[in-house]
Amino acid sequence: MTTTLRTVNPRAHQRFSIARPRKSVALTVIMLLFLIYAIVPLAWLVINASKTQADLFTTFGLAFGDTFALWDNIVATFTYDDGIFLRWLGNTLLYVVLGAGGATLLATLAGYGLAKYTFPGRTAYFAVVLGAVAVPGTALAVPTFLLFSQMGLTNTPWSIIIPSLITPFGLYLIWVYTIDSVPTELLEAARLDGASEMRTFFTISIRLLTPGIVTVALFSIVATWNNYFLPLIMLSDPTWYPLTVGLNQWSSQASGVAAEPIYNLVITGSLITIVPIVVIFLFLQRFWQSGLSAGSVKQ
Image (tube, rainbow, N blue to C red; front, side, top):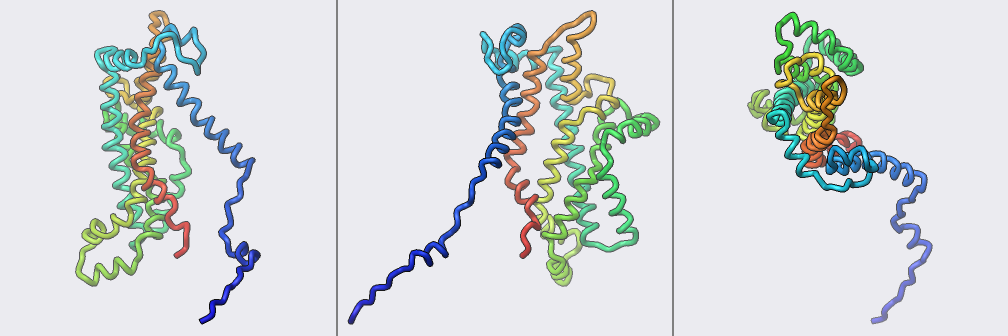
């Protein structure tokens, strides 16, 4: 038996080889600038949270001070003014759990209903939702304050929680994601098997909607956590302040006749404030990425 040797054409081999991605120097430089833009403020915050009040004014912003006082600043932040910072943190968590959690639930139910059910006024309702997306929240703050003032709900947690329940952008995201991720044929098969609409939603649809729900939850959590203008005009009792308004009140203590600057506590409190939101974002990032990419590839 003879063995035949076959030669491989180098050009044909190159033709079918996997092309390597081309590198763009300009794009690399742009991304590096964006990275610096994002990292420098965070680095400044961490470095200055480790300084004493005196070192904040005698050292360079991106250089550590003579004394590393991070732990002392953290303890002072939680104990200053009878531990009011811990109360503000609890208020913020309350507003996030009830406000952002309720907004995510309502957006999921409404978006799913708009996408999978036909009812009178559906087109008009969807047009109103699209119009509401274009309206900034600050434009509605004063009318909301007047409305809640007549209802006697100002200076209460409900004046923050109830407006946070409405998220037109989250409803729109769920509507778009439901169209791409929940096949109508699957729902019809469940109905033929005798499953009720609620059982179909909670056993089938909600599993397919998980990435979209997490995406809406992230947006709602960040919006509620960083909410400043609405609590500022709604609340007058410091015991109901969220972290954003409370830290601003600490910062304003540096001006006036009885000025008591506590910039080191303001900076340390700001650092503590962003830690939970960063942890939540990193923990749910994989769901967020898959939710944004839904529907980008045609099956």
